[in-house]
Image (tube, rainbow, N blue to C red; front, side, top):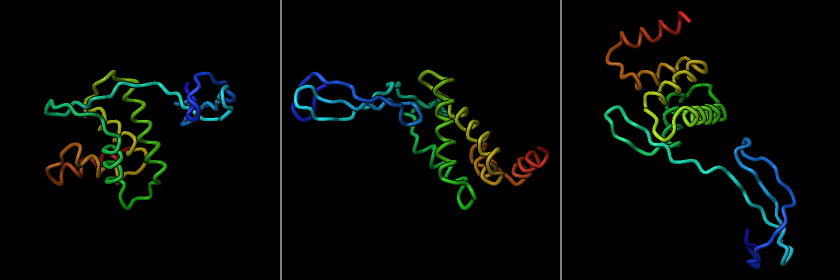
Length: 150
């Protein structure tokens, strides 16, 4: 690792610890040339996941779109932002463990619905109405009846 101050190529690792939910290693280093201390981060480089849409199109997975969809469903509901972030992290981890490079959009939607169902019934019905493309009131009623039975 080159020193950011003098460019010397040799350094000494002073401290290492896990960061960002143990997905990254943070290392404090000291340049053996000038003595400057600096921090580096080490993480696994994952291939970019592609989402396969219902019509067969492929697009790059976008965390922001996932967060936006869940936020829309949880709007004006008592769901904390930290809960939404945890939900998104869990969904991404699940998709990365189940799929190599391409994930069907249906699997992402199902994972979101499973987590919303356990978190907030109204947010679940809101998301399901868009995801399942509800066409009439009967579809809403059957989704609500399913929740009531559980």
